Amino acid sequence: MEKTHHLTERRLADAWAELQNHADQGNALQADAYRLAFADPEFLLRRETRGIRFQLELLKPDLDQANQGIENTVVVFGSARFPSLETARAELEQARQAGEPGALARAERRMRNAHYYEQARLFGQRVASYSADQPADKKMFVATGGGPGIMEAANRGAQEMGAPTVGLNIALPHEQQANPYVTPSLSFKFHYFALRKMHFMMRAKALVAFPGGFGTLDELFEVITLVQTGKSKPVPIVLFGTDYWTRLLDMNVLLEEGAISPEDLALFSYADDPATAWEAIRSFYALPGAP
Image (cartoon, rainbow, N blue to C red; front, side, top):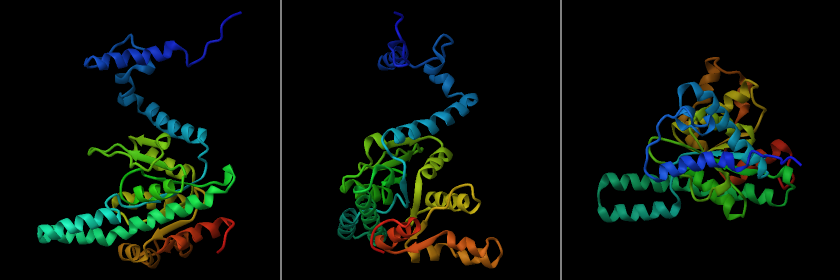
């Protein structure tokens, strides 16, 4: 009887093994017309094959998450620069001993913002606690950009409750690695910001934006725009830290100038503690639990 062949057979694996062996010997890869197209890095990195790279970057995290039962996520955005309370305390003590005014001011600011890390950690715990007893199709998993700061805190809180957590990291000019609280098999690295932001929304059942910088603003307004224009299904969008967000963004100016409609202000809400943030999500979906 004729033998059945599968894509996992050695011929495909050997193509990659050959390249790995070449690299292990310290030899720089050179363009090779005879190399199999799918195992040709020079070919795959050409400008003309960018569309293929888009497709691969879309497919890999999607298939891996589906295989691991990740269908519903609560996405947490926020600054990579806000430290944990223990880190902030150590930095403040060191700055006080050094006695340098600039360093002391920076340490005091980081100490002030460390409470956002702790709140994100508690919020991650709350999401994981709710999902622990839910059937597979009702579970919600914390998903972040996979980096340090607020992202680390949310992943950490969920991981502390025994839940898998998702990290969608990005390759940057300065080295950035996934934080240690992302589940290894759910830790993904992106080259394209656009594909990364698409993945944030593909499974998102809610977005909670903690204080952050340009990256957080970019991600936040992408989501608001997608929901406002009907390109994405409505989801609860929570701005965590009322004082921060109202000082940074006066949304009423947009309304006063006719740049948005009155109903657009209902696209998001504010919260100052994990319970309020979770309640916005719970009430939106009429989830079980005390109000």
